[in-house]
Length: 83
Image (cartoon, rainbow, N blue to C red; front, top):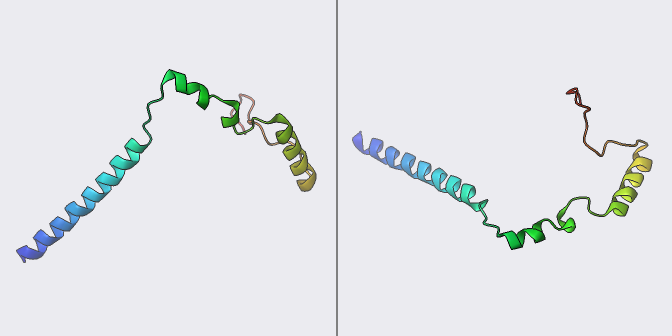
């Protein structure tokens, strides 16, 4: 009776150790040291989602004509809290 309890306790520790290792790896994988001279590459307009204004206008025009609607691409709300 005691042997099964010890085996179950060992399995529980193994599972908890696995979750702890996954958490530690996930937590520290997002840490990155960026030097000031490297930040210019991260602030490049190419890194933005809509850096090409002409392409954005063509895409919005295409979606507007294919769906029969316009707008809905920017941030919503006017300060009143409604979306």
